[in-house]
Every structure is written in C-alpha cells, then in structure tokens.
Amino acid sequence: MLFENIAYWPSWAILTLTIFAVLDAVLKLISLWKCGKNNQLVWFIFLAIFNTVGILPATYLIFFQKKTKKVLIKKENKKVKKTSLKKKPIKKKPSKKRSVKKK
Image (tube, rainbow, N blue to C red; front, side, top):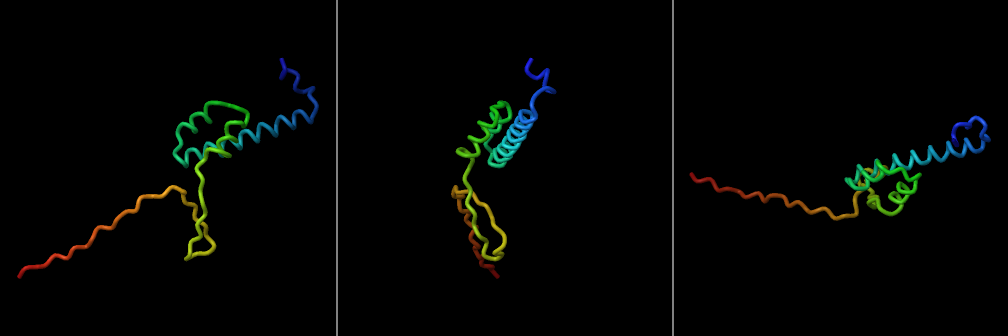
C-alpha cells in the first residue's frame, strides 16, 4: 500500500500533504459556514458529503455564495454593516387613526 511506508517518505512530501490537508479543511469549514449563514441547504449538503480536495468549496466561495455589500453607518463611522444585495420588502407602519370620543 501507499501509506504503509510513510516513515520512508521524504520530508517535503509529508509537508506538502499536510499543507494540502489543512488547506482543504479550512476551505471546507469556511464554505460550510457561509452556506449555513446564507440558508443554502443544497450547497451545504453537497459540501458536507463530497470530499473533492478543495475544488467544490473553492468553486462555491468564488462563484456561488451570496454577494454582500458594505454600508457605512452614519452614526458610528468605525463600524461597518454587511447587508444583502437583495432588496427587502418595505414594512409599512400602521397608520394611527385618532378616534373621536363621544361625550
């Protein structure tokens, strides 16, 4: 087998394999977190089940995650709020009707 004699591998090969494994884990965790945050269940399931050596998580992060824009809050110039590019429906406030009291 390939991994039976791993003790005899050159150190650069072990280091390279370790770097790729860590990179794959980090990409997978970031993409799963963003899928969960954006309520994209299908992408979450595919990323959780299939191990594609970083190809599927990188594809999701580059092309398919929901885009966000940064909006500066006027009250506090230091804080930045992320909002979705999709327009949210405007909630109408109920009108205050004054009732006339009869005496």
